[in-house]
Every structure is written in structure tokens, then in C-alpha cells.
Length: 426
Image (cartoon, rainbow, N blue to C red; front, top):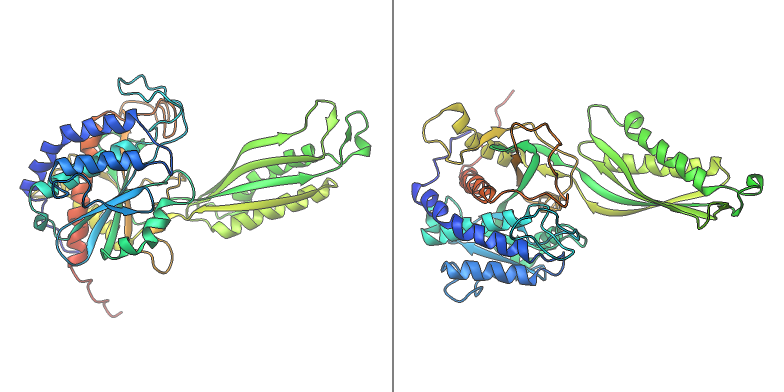
């Protein structure tokens, strides 16, 4: 693999100069978060920030193209294939407990780091506009995407949008802050890095009756309890132990009184598959639901609400980005200036709709990067994690994410410009 040239010094300097304004934008987005599908205000704040830099030709947002209803995108550079970079606009329906001076005061909060991602991409976009897009090996397409946290998926809509495809995106990059990684680490690797995630609704129908006369009933609560226990064994006994999957039941509902056997019991959960077979796990869970219910004299049914496929990093793109990011660790000349250390092992059963950019026959080469936020001296899992009411990366993470994105964009652009080597005969 050819070695990418270093990040141009002018771009690095311009990026550093943009970070204070990007941090202020992060505060504004964090203070006034918006739920999935209601991101117009956040998009407009991004347009204002880009317009203030001159990136949009003076008038705020005049070149921020609409996409996927409440999203926007901006291309910098000439014709030809572009490197797209995705950042998410939406927040979560959570009451924040961070105690930050810019804490959101309502029932919505940026407790997944999306405000950091957006601010970092704005800093990168402003830096490119303030210097010369031609300093990048390929045009930049900045995508500010709605609806990552809730269906219908914003990524699926962007990926299918004619306006997005008109920019000829040849690679798509994403980034996510990650409290499972120590601060100072950036991770990118080929293959699956986030799991698929499908919701399941389980309904068990029985025969209602008096709790003192159980033989006259067919107890759906008991059947459901057995189902919940048994579907945990699908992964442990039906999936290759070298492949990852997980079944989680997060809600159970039944009954109206303690002495009444109800007619129905329900449960809701998720089924995730990283490199395990998604369809096989779902089929096995369905079998357990139906047959366990029948064994208790009840009937059971399972409804699947498909959500996200697995995030699978393109082998060539991820390898090119990893090779470039790893130059600092190996002590080579012209380090990438991210100040981060490469990790090529991390992956998780979290899910992200970024998967839609690379999924299916029309999928694009894509790669997700993870940037660590955890205190290196803290025991893993002790600090608030993603979606926790107290999760909030510090402001310095805006710079760390922006530097990682700049390096990844340079590596991806160079990767696109270098034709693949012919296969050697064996």
C-alpha cells in the first residue's frame, strides 16, 4: 500500500485556529438539543457557523444543501469523486445530569457525543474553506445528518438521496466518541465494528383466571418468563462462540392485579449481531418464543422491527486510514499530527445507522473511526457511558475528533487516487 503524504501544514494550522469557534458551537448545540426529526434549528446553527467562515459564500447557509428533510450538506472542492464525512445532528430524549454550564434544561440532551461530532466537522469544513480545498487529495462533502437515533434512519435517506449521489461520493467516513476507549486512542479496523440492531416485540397469549386456581388458566406470565431466560441461550448455544451477538430484553408487561393470571404478557427487546448471522439469530429466537409458549399451553408470536445492519468497514479504506493514523506510533517521518495513538482491535455491539452508507449492492466504501474519551487511569466501565444522563466529553474532544477526521480525509482521498494493485497470480 502506497504511503499517503502528510496532512498539509496549512490545513493543520487552519484547523487549530477554528477550534475555539467550534467549541462555542458545541456549547450552543448542547444547550439547545433537538430530537430526531426536529433538527432544523441545529442544522441552521451549523449553516450560520459555516456562513460566518465564508464557506457558504457569505450568506449563511446559502450553499448548505438540504438533504433528508432536516439535514444539510456542503461540498468543497472541484469535480470528481468526493470523500463524504458524516456527523449527526440529533439528541436523545434524556434529562441531562452533567452539571455543565451549558447543560440542556429540558427533557432532551446530547448524551451520545453528537454535538462534539458536528462541531468537529464544522471546524474541519471551515479550515478547508479558509485555506484551499485543492490541498486535499479529493473534494470534501460534509454531511450533517438527521435522525441517527430514531427510525426512519437519516443515514438510509441520505445514502439514497439523489442530491447526495450527485456529488459522486466515493468513500464515506464517520466518527464516534467512545468511552470504552482511553483518551488519546483512535481506533479503525477493517470489517464489522458495530452490530446490527433489530427490535423484537414478543406477545404470549394465555387463558386468564384466578391466581388460586392456576389449573384453570394457561399462564402467559410463566411462559414469558421462561422465554426470556431461554432466548439468552440462543447466543451461547446456537451461535459460533468466535462470533458476536447479543439478545437483550428491556421491557416486560403483564397483568393488572397480583391475584389474577392475565390473558396476555408482552416483552420488548433487541437482537444484535456483529459478525454472527443476523437472520439465524432472529429465526432461533422466534423458535424459542413459539415453542416455549406452546409447551405452557399458550401461543407466542414475535414481531421484528428491522433497524440497522452491522457497520462493516471497507477493508481497503479502513486499512488506508489505519496505516496513515498509525504513522505517529511507528515513529516514521512526517507524523499525522493527530496526537492520537492507533488501535486496531476495538469493536462493539453498539449500533449506528452509519451502516446504511456501506450496506447493500449500492453501498459505498465506508469506515467508522472511534476516538476514546475515558480517563486512562480509570477502571473500564466506571465512568458514564454513551446515552447515560451524565455522559459528556470535555471540550478538548472537539479538537481530537477534528484532527482524526482531517487525517482520515487525507488518507481516504489518497486511497481513492491510487489505483488498486493487480492481483498476483498464485
